[in-house]
Amino acid sequence: MLETRKCRRFLLGCALMSLSVFLLSFHSTRLTRVSRAQQYSIPSQIPQNNTVIKYPLDFVYPYNYSFILNEPDKCRHGDPFVVILILTQAHAIGNRHAIRQTWGNESLVPGVSLVRLFLLGMPKHFTNELQEMLEDESKLFHDIIQQNFMDTYINLTIKTMMGLQWVSTFCPNVSYIMKIDDDMFLNTEHLVKFLNPKVPGKKDYFTGYVVKGTRPVRAEWYRYYLPKELYEPDYFPPYCGGPGYLLSGDMAKKIYDIAHVIKPFHVEDAFMGVCLEKLKVAITVAPKSFFNGHKIAYEKCQYSKLITVHHFGPDELLKLWPDFTTAKELCQTNNTS
Image (cartoon, rainbow, N blue to C red):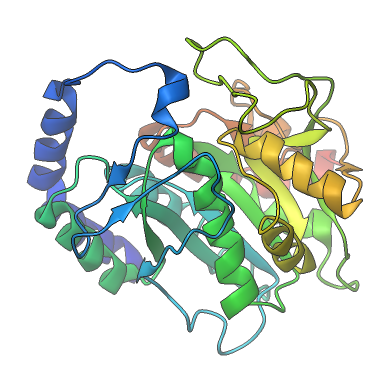
């Protein structure tokens, strides 16, 4: 397979670089200790044209970020049925390699146009060598989108908004968007079957694993701490769990536009729920267990009825995928759902 040979050649070329980046990250130490509340007002310095990109408390998206790597022509030859936006980081080479060979293969569903895009910011431990490695990968596979914000958990909302900005700018007529993390299992064929390309695409559509009745965390030591400066209400509206959710193509611009007037916060999936509430768009409840935000033990016929499963490393994904694909015909005979 051509794409497999490309992956092998690329991986051999960047293995040593990946190791060096890992060691740099492992041995890095903080020069100062700050509270999580203080982190929001600290400039995120990025060695990109000697500029400093900030995430201030009064930030409203977009905050003047630029595309470093882009694929503006991905939809030039036709409107795809699904654009798969995959959140990843620079060092996650193995994850991207596994996804391209499995559920992210753009030719996986015959007769259905799929577009795969990996979304990245600028690595926290930036080196010219790491950026050059990303550029080489981009030239090889044409599936990486990168802007010049710092790629940290605090900026997760910015990364998702970048994906919606790309869709609304370069692929506005796509039928559906699947936003998903790079440590997920995606049953792409069942996703397409669920959406049914033979019928007109839905509008104002948003679905996934629905989360209700949650509140912002106000304890400063917790990872999900959310200060009132960023989000004042003591409740979250319903939202879909961030590891994987699905929306109709028209929602990309609607959410991107409303985000221009809402102060964003780093709990990305909850922020999307706030956007939906402002837009007065109700979440569609998908059939039970289609979208899973947790790990489920692999069983091929059970997986044939699911769309997403969380917590999959690249080795596990590559190991189970051949069995999963050969089980399709057997499971279809036993699957009436």
